[in-house]
Image 1 (cartoon, rainbow, N blue to C red):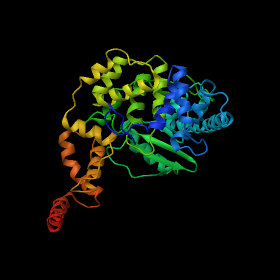
Image 2: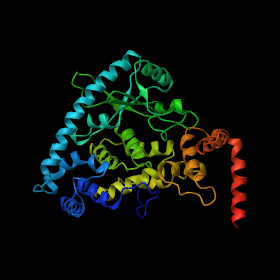
Image 3: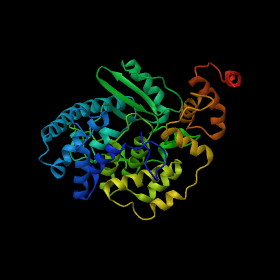
Image 4: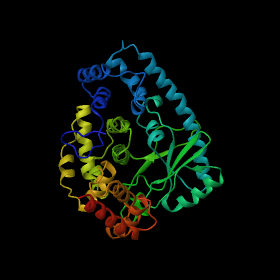
Length: 377
């Protein structure tokens, strides 16, 4: 994780990865080549980070511009071919998954990797992905989860009310079954109505069977890419910047709608900083008035804290130690609730994160901590 001057939060790429992204995305070829030389001089392709590894296919797309004589050109192109073969397997699995969901009476929205590969990437090997993300209607999610379990799928983690969905595994196949687009893209107090705000459309390319896939419209996909890509994760998700660039390059983003969505879901500061960062990578200016409109959206205290919970790694509190980290997770897990609902739920979530059965134990923990501090004094 890294901080960048002028940007909020610490969920931005490290300096070497910024060079890599600039090499891949900058529209001035000379700037891109200079960034590639600076990055390549300190990078061993045999030991990439997990997220650098995921960009090898994108490097293959760009290497003729960056350095066609690079000694690892063959490796980059080979990884793109490997990714393409894997994508064909994944898309075949997607076809079967969509058939099963149709049998269960729902038309899902395909998200993330497969959706982007079928819409904004010219080569399916340039955008690898390891699982299939599908969004089903909020009210049908529990029923479909039960059907998946009956079909032999195993959940990989415990679910909770504010979660985006459930990850399943069966054999080598993995599915992320969404009830929400993202835990942060939610109508507060009315999560079941979130999809009424969002737009979908058919993907430009069909599956090999001729099946048409429904995906997010470009503006909505850009919002999802930014919010998901900049959340605090290790390793950092570098792909979001490339995904965002591919979406913007379609010239189908409705910038006024992007501002409206950012305000609706209370993520305007995040979208603002992400667009500023992306502009530094690409040399492409943000359309006039967009940043100004985002900057005028003032968040309330709880809205700011919730944004921090998703995009800033909390420092251990001087007094409560791990409690600050657990409070951050509690704010994450209650993102879908109103302020009153969150006030009621956060103590229980905080206690759970500290390994306690009940929120009533929290005052006891505070008193014990006070006693230890005074004893040491």
